[in-house]
Length: 330
Image 1 (cartoon, rainbow, N blue to C red):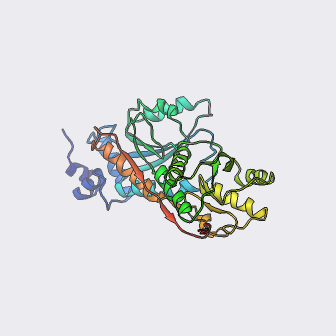
Image 2: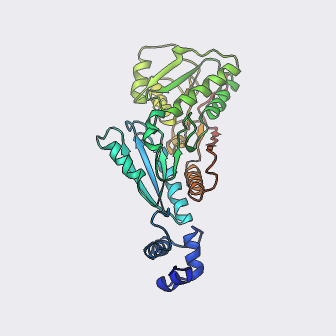
Image 3: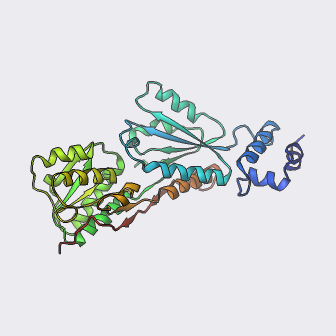
């Protein structure tokens, strides 16, 4: 005999409306109630065993250099958790590290799990790293990464346009000797930011000068080593992210340079530290929490069969936060 919503109501003690709202991931049903309803719905056969009730955030690490050095991702994860809760999905987090000998088996096990949709945080990924994920038996959405093969739905930052815009801010303030503070681990986001940086220079007919490019790992230490060689400095730097910008600022100040009187500098991410640095850093604000929520909403569309025939690339546009690290030298 087929189980109805009314039967589920009798078994759980919740009203038919609450049962319906929970099963359709609507607002107003708390987590404990939803979990109990889904448990009974599965046990009675009302829901098939592979009905998606859980969203798993898979955090990919290639070497941990980016994910472990910046607090950028915490707000994004909080946004994912909030939206999962709002829509009635359980949220779990798994870490996969490519350096781990059991990495491939761990990934295969995750992708074969029933009743789950996956958000794959691919910040440290290169395109070749995605091959394991292509034959997943569950819906997968790529977060903070994009592949040129265009075979994954993605939510990511519009890195190139944002970098172009903040570099144009330097150029609009009269800077024509503009340097690039380059992260030594070239994640795809950094490469896109460099393209945006170059696009702005070309638009203003300003040459890119290799001698003004500084590659850093540990930003402050590496910048200090660079400055000790007494190089000719540009009037301004664009940095791949705020961690690099803030480390470079500290090094410049230790060597007697004033920010922005001697050297202007801009970052990318708008970390909490950037607002309270001395001076406060001009940077690009990424709405990290909203980006996480957008990823959940798009994954839920895929789970519900909405827009599955079209691969989408959703780009979040950062906003320039004007503070005190850019001098007008016109």
